[in-house]
Amino acid sequence: MEKTLITDTGFAAKGYIISTEKQLLDFDIIYNFLDNESYWAKGIPPEKLQLAIDNSLCFGIYHHEQLCGFARVISDTATFAYICDVFVLHTHRGHNLSKWLIKTIIDHPDLQGLRRWSLATADAHGLYGQYGFTPVSKPELWMEIHTPYLPTTETQN
Image (cartoon, rainbow, N blue to C red):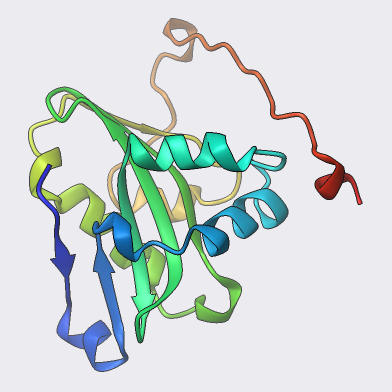
């Protein structure tokens, strides 16, 4: 997969960039957000998250070289992509960074020509709808095995 550094003059002028360079990711920030602030990944073991990052196309949003947003894409790069673990830190919300992130993901050169994109959200339908996402047209065709993470001692306190 091609590694990319994405700049936009408007965002760059404010000190923001998006990159797929994994060595720039701040694992501690990602883990802390997903384990403590997300509704979808509470209790994720750090080693499971590291394996997920290692095997995904990851997008980091950086403000003056500090990670402030993140998303992962799981894809075969030919037919299907699943977008997950999307977040922007609270202190950087309200600057349209999530819109820029989703547009950057959809426009990424390794993710062109896919037959299907998928994601799950409890509260961002409006954001994703701007990029063509709709509720699953035939939910009766989809199935899942859902195994929630067990809360760790730290997440129970």
